[in-house]
Length: 238
Image (cartoon, rainbow, N blue to C red; front, side, top):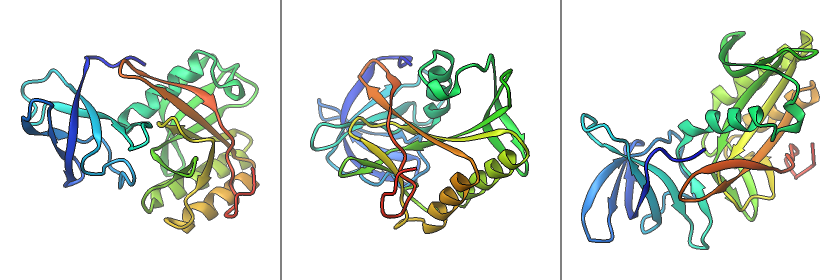
């Protein structure tokens, strides 16, 4: 996925009110940009970080620039725009980069499932397949982790997928890891133990857990590297 407009570089001064961030351009100009991320952004919103943002091209927007990438002190790039995750996953599915999800000619988005809406329904294979996408920006010591804040909604989605599997469908939780330094994926039990339990319960019930890591450049982001999902609280592999 290529960015719609060229990215500009800046230094993050602070993130606040969830959706706002103050930045400074290399020429010293300071202004406010939009933060398209509802999570805690733990580890990717440190003041002084090098970031990149783009002009959304809408002069009627109060904050017309959108934050896209953060760089950590060790040079790792993180895609912080969570609104891109579904499009990244859809692109990966439709271009055949998710071997486990091959063979479904129809991909429908935002499909009702139980009391929720699931990101994708894949149809045309032997069994319908429901896919819920979770964007991941948190990682520690080479391990990506989700969620970065308590997520009751995330636990509910796992339960809905498990019920779909019990009814004869496939259910997949797919972690879209928008950073380049993760070698494995685990639930963040220390942040939301209920989510970790929900994931283990869902996997035990037949839900498939997949994770794809992104390659991130200043021109675009591509999900292209599968990594293992370890569902156990102590790192037991799925």
